[in-house]
Image (cartoon, rainbow over all chains, first blue to last red; front, side):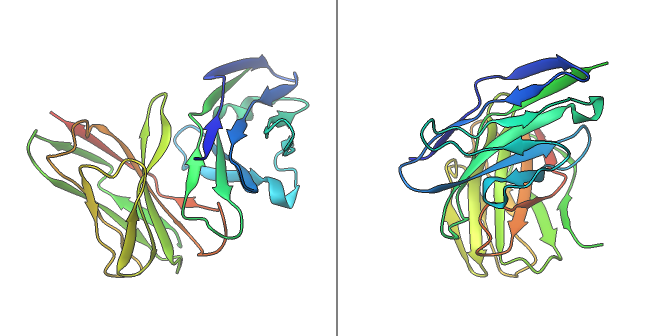
Length: 111
Length: 113
C-alpha cells in the first residue's frame, strides 16, 4: 500500500525566513511525487513534481529515496505563500489512477 | 474558458435523501476523479474513471455511486447509505497517462441536516 505522511498540520514562519514542509512516503516501487497547493478561495493546483526538477515560485523539492522523503523548501518565505500544501504520490509508469494525498500542512507566513 | 465545473457549490439535504453532484469538464481529458476533503484528513479518493463507460472504486467508495456516460461528465451520487456525507467534494480530471497532474474543480460542499 502507498502512504504519504505530512507530520505538521500547521507551520508558521516570518516573512523572509526559510521554510520547509515535510513529506515522507511509503511505497515499494518507483513512485512519482508531487506537491499541490490550495490558496485561500482558489482551486487546488499542482505546484511541482519531482520528475521535472523545476523550481516554481521559489519552491524546490528533492526526492530522497534513501529517506523516502520529498520535502518542499523555499529559502525566503513570502506572505503570499500562505496556503494549504499537500504532498501526493503516484505509481510511476503512467498509472495515474491512484494519486494518494497526505493530510496537508497549513503554512502561515507572518509579516 | 476551459476547465472543470462543479455544481452546486453548496447543497443541503435531509438524512435519508440521495443527492447528485455534477462535474463537467471541457479539457478533453480522458480521466476523471472524485475526492472527498475533510479537515485534518486530506483528500481521499472516492471513485475514478479512466475512460467512458468504465470506472473503479477508490479508497472510500461505500455509500457513493458514479456514472461515466460521456467523456465530459462524471456525476457523483451520495446515497443515504453514506454514514457521514457532510463534506467538501472535489472533482478532478487528467490527461490519461500523465501521472499525477490533476486539474481540480472549485468543489461542492454538502451538508446533511
